Image (cartoon, rainbow, N blue to C red):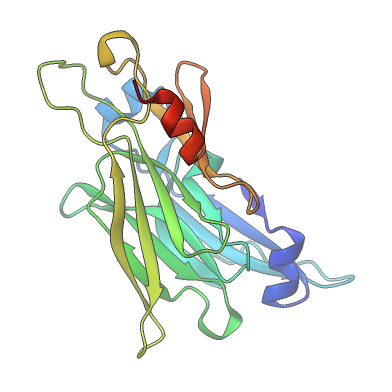
Length: 233
């Protein structure tokens, strides 16, 4: 799998055509997680490398030890990885094999500190999708619902974390900004879906959207005061 950086990313990083190469190592995540989501191609061990393309010269993409951005991460689909609009950072889902948990990690894409871990947040229950906000100050995290026991309190659907640059060290601090216990529900407020992907809306449109395993695409935008008054009995 290959994820091509957009034009803004190319120019802001090194003014060269750039490609993020994702190599699958082949370690599967917990089978219950894979079975319920239907993500049979989901690998919990992928390596991400970045390659510049020069005129009349192909990069040596067969070299597994060069230009490494992320040594190990989870990529179930394109929604499980995102590049900030300024091309400086990449956010991924990483496995914590020792604790059997998952975390969200932000790495640098700048040439001077390529692959440096800027911040990490977690543990996160069953993350499947991550998305940078338009100004790259927040990250939207979508989570899958894998429990079929309706007697248990359902886990959160999504979380928004803020990432702020620290004054010293050049790193960032990731903290929880908001948690969504249930974004969308069926009759009787019973969850009948699982999230597949979440994304922020474009910069000029406040809000976000998410897709479910039921084929739904839901767009959420803030309510204005007039809408709130109309809904008030």
